[in-house]
Length: 180
Image 1: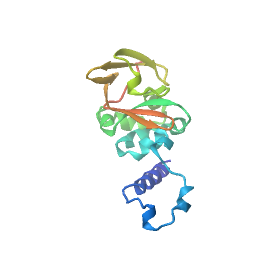
Image 2: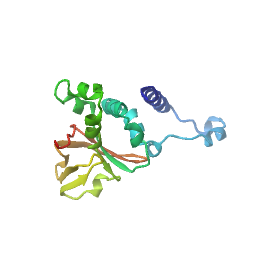
Image 3: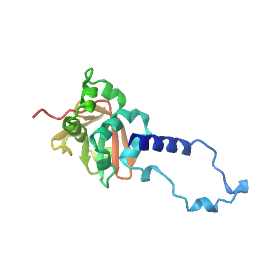
Image 4: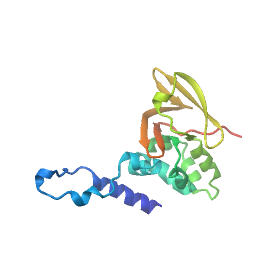
């Protein structure tokens, strides 16, 4: 899976940045008309995360639990995606212990606590505090104020990254489900 992720990142990197030829170049573009194109709308949540290096820790965690295939599914899903910096703010050794553990159930629970069924855009939220059920089973508290959106103790730092099967909201912390 990591090899697939690396290939996808390299492939997506190679797609951008060059000049776009037009008909005035004298080139026959008809052969390219039928070629499939990868747009943000055709990328799954996992594809978007793999293509953004600030989510490499999240992708590693998803891969180690086998949750990649779930988030490549039809959805739709809303994912509150912690950045690498958010994972780095965990206590020393915590992430390594979770990823390296033979029993991945705790890591899986944490990751599923970041996922809500349905695609909820920031504009769909009304001001105030709301509780939404996660795929982990417990509910998340979302607070919308004039200062921004808080999900649990994490701030949404970038909202509404659309994918073919849902939406990603980037957060600055790792959400921990309530202790049982």
